[in-house]
Length: 146
Ligand code: HEM
Image: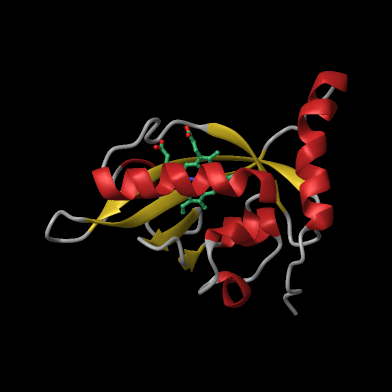
């Protein structure tokens, strides 16, 4: 099991876990509150579900490297990350990431701790930075989840 932020969240309400392929295996209550999907809707989907289209390439490069090497750039650090809500809007998600390990010590996936929804990005500079994310979502053909 992962250590760190997860240790203080024994029921896993605050966590999202994925396997080595990035498929969601656990979706805590806080994830449901922040992103709008129920566990039934999220489990079995790839974590792309909540990643803005234009950030997916970077996510998967970082993710695969971390899974293969067992090393992360910023393990456990609290980050404010743009995420996609079920309603299609880009929301500020506050959370952190660690890798999880099987009993034999091998990396078996990743754990995101959901700390909540952060304050919105304000100001013109941020609007410019975030514009491609919103555009990316417009052009994304996503299968609606009922
Ligand atoms: C809003 C959702 C998310 C976004 C926008 C996102 C984006 C990113 C980006 C841009 C990177 C590359 C970071 C870098 O190069 O420094 C990354 C890395 C990573 N992501 Fe995601 N990601 C999201 C959700 C998740 C979730 C839910 C998980 C796992 C359950 C996850 C696991 C990872 C891992 C393990 C890395 C490697 C991090 C490191 O080396 O420090 N991500 N992600």
